[in-house]
Length: 124
Image (tube, rainbow, N blue to C red; front, side, top):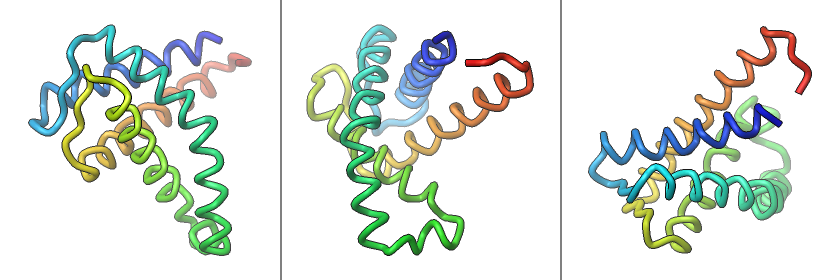
């Protein structure tokens, strides 16, 4: 449970950092970043699952065979980010390329979090 809360906070932190570094991203406050991170998690685990399944079926598993399955995950997360942007007025992501960059940074943060919890021996 703690891993999910930390992952939510890391995602919100990535939103805030991207908003401060890049001109194509706007986040009103950290609280709105947490709400956006929660909404992204819900969309990514429901709609994202269906979209990944469709993309994998359409490509006949080609990306997975090449070891590039993360590309589909990042693109699907970027599409979910654009939906979050559409649903929330306090978040603004101007381009799809910026959404892809944010998705990549969220994935890196999640990877680091997973490796920290794996090395600590905690069962989550």
